[in-house]
Image (tube, rainbow, N blue to C red):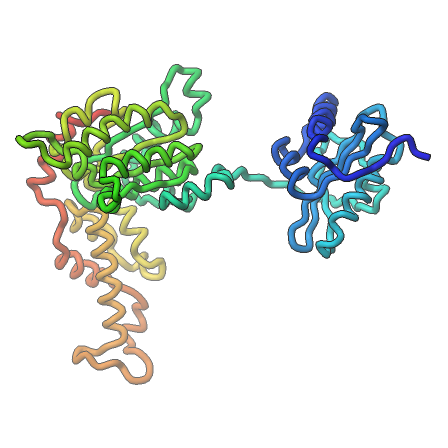
Length: 438
């Protein structure tokens, strides 16, 4: 009779699993699955242990998904190896997983692990010429509930790369914000305190919201936008709802919190009697220092009218940076046009002319002109000059183009009203000198 027996895992066996884990590490074998994953699977999936007297000398943990099963953990204490315990553990955990209708059972083991007899003895086949890829998901499952209640979301990982042009702004944001937040340990070595709150300011349509989302995408942190207009309807009042929202945000491990048009709740406090919004401004001024004490978070406030903000709001100690986001330069405008023009016709379009004609345009203006040109070209391809749809095939000229022409874009540019006037742009340049902090 064997001196050991196999039974199902009990919650009281966690210390034994930890001892097995440490015994593997002691032999310079780095398990594929992290300890929290193994312990979670012990409780929620399928696990068996080998017991010698009162001591746990081995364990196997499996996880089933659809018709595929995975061995998450297999270990035996060194002094009990070569006794067939590993093979028996694999057989036992497979029996527990069998009701799932598995047609394949797989295992990943470290390349440094040389003791593979248990797998080979239980009918596993070594697959060669395979590579294992792994990517850690930054948002934990337990955070999804609070995140959903806040209206937050996980943004696509390519938003940062898709911000066309605006190289100077991207470079500044990458170095001042993303670098110290993404490389917190390295920043600490150099004595850099990661930023906690920033203000983005500039004329309307210059991409402040886009940059806030791109920062969250670049960091792979959840993006939570706070809408004061929605909070105003809360029975607790705007100030109370704002306080409650930030308490809920504190439950997240990481977050980029965005408030657009922040001047609506942080405008200059003045007048007798005080404006009802002054209480909201006071509450926000209290919230920011508490927010700054929590690592792994970044508050991004955006405004089109930075001069309207309360003086105390922009004071040092509340915001690390006050960053201007202006109109795109020539290089940025070219990148935008290259992005918006369909690839089938971009080589036939005079992009340089479009770049020249859109000086003073915001990114939103350029996007509008590009969409307008595409719509015009589509209508020309479908309707004749009298507004009648072509019968049969499209006209030869329309079919040959298969997309907007340079003239379509020029016409659209001429019909586009720019968002930012010369006076507003000049005021923005003055604000950079007097209020910017980078």
